[in-house]
Image (cartoon, rainbow, N blue to C red; front, side):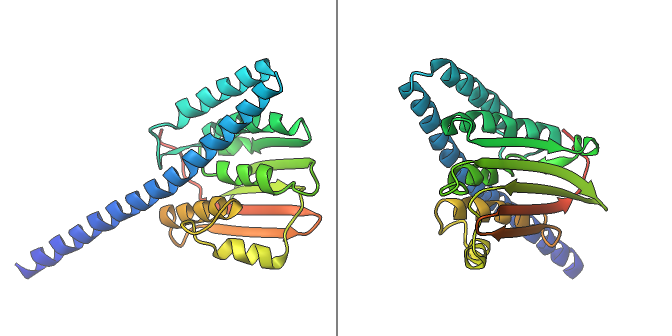
Length: 227
């Protein structure tokens, strides 16, 4: 019947859209992983050159922990507590190369521990802060804080680095994840993943001022983690 044909057509469209969404997410995730691994290995190489082998071993241990929790989990949603551990492992990998000049920490309100968050969603933003926010200032802090309010989960990433002009912020917000470099890729990647996972339900805002640092705020529905 015509109704059955229409229903089948609608089902086919849903399947096709889901496959397209998954392939887009896979592409975005694969964009981050090699970039991250390259920077991590560069950090380890730097430590070995400085003959700081114990620090290099600790960094490799953190890398192993991070890989255990993230490999084969492309586009998986994890708990906030797992994501915090991922971020802390990442911080312990990257921060030694800055000789303690950039202090970073990650925290969440206790009532968020079992809420879901896309795996490694925040890592590109933390990476950006380390690699791009302290070109002039050289030292400062990065703080990640996760909380919930009125059915939404909020993730704030704040640094006390160089800051950006309104024009630079506008460029970052309108950059494509397929045609950017450095911090543009990280920010547009996270923004694109949120748009695919939470269409019409996500927020992404950047507040920045030259000489005062940058504040990035993400939001999406607060849902309990199933895993």
